[in-house]
Length: 275
Image 1 (tube, rainbow, N blue to C red):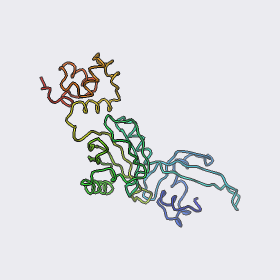
Image 2: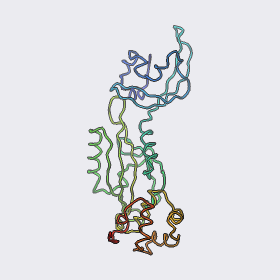
Image 3: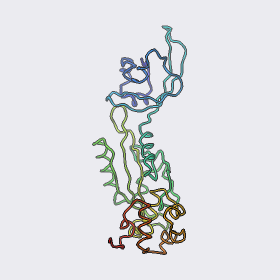
Image 4: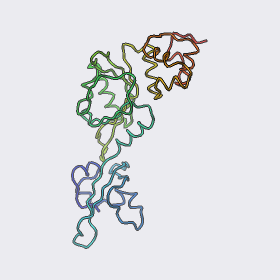
């Protein structure tokens, strides 16, 4: 049984400190308890904890043996780390569509930020870590975004959000598409938000085919040389299309590129009328 716990462990497991000694170990750590005849595994083990709300949270459990207690039984120091947010970020990263992933606290301060791969269009060198996410978003959208995030918490489900950044240096504001996932503690209260940013483009040039081409190449993780090799189109032509020096390619060129990017031609070049 758990004989004592700090506030962080109490928040994680969802049982008040004075109630913890009365909670069977097998209820808190069902996977470890199912190991019949096994000694409590020492050092780090990835497992689950079943909270007071009957939610199962992935955790990293560190077990250190201590001196034998007064009745001669084993005594351990347990340190548990909640992996809920990290697991969600990992799933988003494995999907291959997220440019950025991160975690922000309930005050919207970014506590973790990771770049999966740079999008075709991105802000200048700005540091999000330990800053409010709203320091970088269009002020006119703040209340709307906060309202959507509050509803996300109430519904206990992730939500896709569309938002715009402030203007950075010589870049226009950027249009972002992201997914927000609320993470809860053991009592079912909001603990933090995990987020991914999976689409980004300049608002002022959203209709420019060159920007759209860059975005789709970034989504498919294709360089100009790789696209040239797979389509048979010269690297010079692809570079000119990406830089806007060619605004309307020949129909066959557009179809070859669109096919390789697995997208309709009109998604990049709407001026090319469908046959």
